[in-house]
Image (cartoon, rainbow, N blue to C red):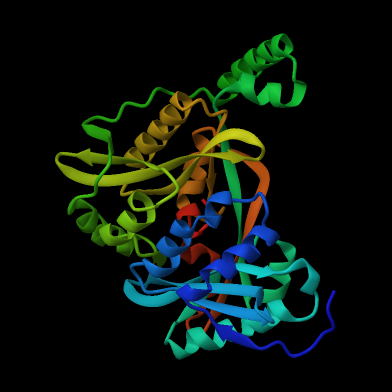
Length: 354
């Protein structure tokens, strides 16, 4: 550990990409290896439709030893579109930890966003070191975001713990029967609702977004431009998008991705929006069907307990897991609604994790 001192922070640029990725390889090692791909960095930082990302660096000699980034991000707050940010990738070289580098980059970021007329900043810190650093410089935790899971392949779930095929088959069968008995799910029959997988977004997504805005006090902008960039133009990750229509009108969509979640072979709901409960149910059922076809053991979704979808998902058989995420906000604005957990609509799509 190096001696504590006043660390000088400077803004980074595309020229610093190699140094930033070298630090990431040291700090995160085997986590999200695709983020070491220069295409990922350029897609996220340079091609973001809401503006080029801001990076803050600390160096020792010619080596990057500290890093933090803010990604400009538009939000609808009470139907007014304002500029916020997604703060992410707080990194400090292992040989330089606990000497104030994280705090220095966090403070620099706060001032940078203020100069750029950003209204507020959001973050989903996973590591306790990052969480504590942000709290120390004035960030506030708004809520916890639990992960709900729907069991799909009981054999795979039981085998994860027992490791014996025949015992797992028996245990999985018993677990499935018990789950079906408790849930007693009725077969979904969405009259006139058509749900299909798509690989391009048309103008209906912009019209749908305008109808969604009044439903949520605070929500990250999800117009066609943003969704195209976030999911269809991603250079290293593949997403499945299903669109729901009724009577020729778009009613909702769901975005899914196959990942490792809770050490299981899983799929996750990355994003989900629906105009009514019928559409919500239909899209989630399609998500379960898709995940089963992909061979997933679980389908997971990160969603706050205060969100109206939470209760619907629980009724459909989604179960609480031990996993949850912290959601933090730093405000340059006088709006108290930013710290109201019930005001926010957040999914994994609002993060850079999945």
